[in-house]
Length: 361
Ligand SMILES: [Ca+2]
Image (cartoon, rainbow, N blue to C red; front, side, top):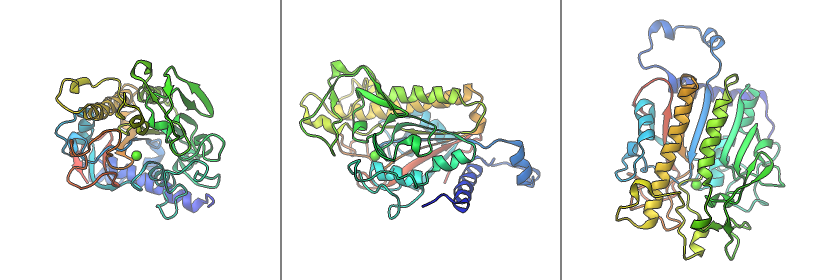
C-alpha cells in the first residue's frame, strides 16, 4: 500500500479529533467554542503525543480499575485528572500483532504482522505505512523506546526505516523477554550492557533471549527506557513530538522456566511487597507493575518540569491482557478485573492532558 494524501488526511484527522476531544475543557465557554478552527490552529503548534504501553498488563491491574493489592498511585492520579476509558480493545491478544495493528492502523485481517512469528516470516515492509511516518510528515519528531517486534536486524522492518527518528530498545520480541539483556539497540547499532546472560538449552522462536543469574543482573532495561524517555522529552522544545514508550513489563521472561534458580517476573527488588506472604512470582509481578507506575511518574514529572504538560497528551495502556507465564497467577490479583480469562484483547486506557476531567468514557 502506498501512502497517499487521502490516507494521510484520514490518519491525521483521527489523531486531531482524538487529541481535541481528550483535551476539550468541560467548562468551555460558548465564545471559546465559536472560535474558528483555522485561527485556533494557527495560534498553537500541534500537541505532543506520548503513547505508553505496558506489556501483558491486565485490565484490572491498576487501582483506578479496581486493583486491591498492587499499588499504582501515579497512574491512578492520571486517571483522576484525565480520562479513564473502559471499553478500548487492543489490536489482538499477543505482543507483535497488537503492535502491528497499533502502528499501521490496520486490523488483524490486513496488518502485516499477524502473529508472534519468527522474524524471517513476518516483518513490516518498506511500503507499509506507520503512524510514525504520518506524524513525521506532519512535522513531528518521532521516537520509539522499548520493545518493537515488527522488524529485526537484516530485514525491512527496523524502526528507523518505519518512521522513527530515534529508537532505543529491543528489536526482537523474544530478546525482550529478558529484562536484564546483555545488549540493546540504539537506532541501528547494538549497545552492549553489563548484564551476563545464560542461554537456555533451546531457542525460543529461533532466538536465545536467555536469563541473567541474580548476581549477574546489573542494568534493568526498563530503568534505561524511563531515562531515555526523560532525556528525549528534555530535547524536544521546538518541534511537536511523538514518543512511543513500548514497555516490556510486566511480561514474563519465558525462558526462566528452563532454570531452577529463576522465575520469570524479573524486577530489581520486590519493594513494598518483599515481606508479604505471597508467592515469589506474585511479589515480582506486583513490583513490576508498581515499577511501571514509578516510571510513568518520572515521565509526567519531566513534562511538568519542562513546561510541556499543557501541550502534551499522554496515553497509557497495555498491548493485551494479563498472562500466566513465568510463574505468575493472574487470578491472584484478579488481573482481568470484571472480565474472564487471560491474554484477552480488552485493555485499560488512561488519558492524561492538561485539563482535569476525572471523566470516564
Ligand atoms: Ca504482550
